Amino acid sequence: MENQASSTWGDAYHSVRELIKFLGEDPDREGLKETPYRVLKSLKEMLCGYSQDPKDVMKTFEDGACDEMVLVKGINLESLCEHHLLPFIGQAHVAYIPNKRVIGLSKIARLVDIYAKRLQIQERLTVQITKALDDYLKPQGSACVIEAKHLCLSCRGVMKQNAVMVTSSLTGAFRDPEVRSEFLRLIGRE
Ligand SMILES: [Zn+2]
Image (tube, rainbow, N blue to C red; front, top):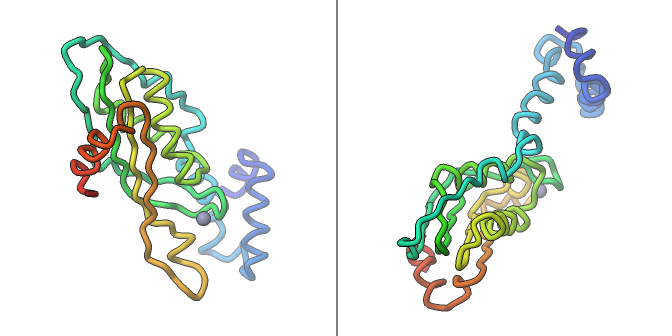
């Protein structure tokens, strides 16, 4: 297993072995022998968004009749903080007001996943989601609120914090106070 993994993953495999040594452990002990392979495999999985293009899921279709707010609430989100390589986990609420074109609701969840499965900061992730909606769907406006717990906050330091970080991005019609307030009310934040 080790030889096979080390030839497939190359330098990265050895780097994780070095990391285990750096942490004061023995990478050859039974429980740790296959850990470098597992670490790289799970990181690859958590960062699979790099090999996916939002344009492939943003298949929109025409529907002139629909001009009310479309909201997908509580999309589960797991991402990896680029500062600490530790997960942040939470939910995204995404909305848009169509301008003749709409998109399948599952596609919005896919879009969130594509950007979440990259090294991220929550602020950028939030903006990337509304930007993609604006670019591909050209709606009257789009909105995204993300609420997430960051393991780099809750697992480190003396002041372990259990805080939830909330970020939002609102474009176009969502900057209108009434629309904004309807959106926030619908996601239970007002
Ligand atoms: Zn962090």
